[in-house]
Length: 212
Image (cartoon, rainbow, N blue to C red):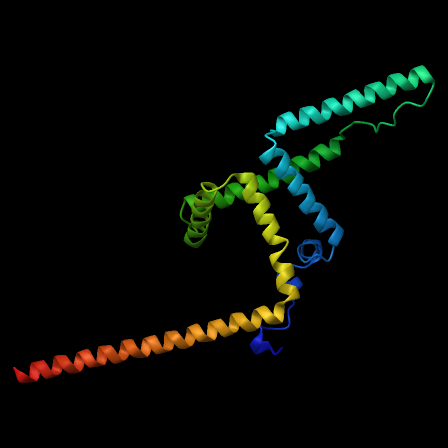
């Protein structure tokens, strides 16, 4: 397929167009196990929270209760039967970890606040209209479905559409470009008809004015 028959012209691959690296590998199923794992995890999350009626707090409480009960019974049984205690890692947050997390959060929050201030003060009108359009679109879509279903559907589309496009790239590009050319031809004919109609209207108006 020549560059003129490609939807995304040039020598860059789809992998490069979506940023490359691990994220592109996951989206294009180069890391198949990781991609499947993300989909299964999101599906399980959607089923647990969206269909079974769990909330995040109730789920965390149930899981922690189960873990604590298992570890407690294991520890008591080990002490009675003279068996080794359950191997628990040292539960400790170092000061470096806390500082690094705080610095990461502070940096991103400051960036968000700076962008928000620029939008509010009218310094970047293009960004304002982009953000407004995105927020309006989110508002409309969220009125049609719940957040969890929207997130799962979006993730499913992100992890399937680019991979399918890469697999059938030539077929998709050929048909999309064919449709584009037909629409362009239709637009040209429509424009010619509009010009012709306008010219005829001008001629009729000149004829009427000449009779008077």
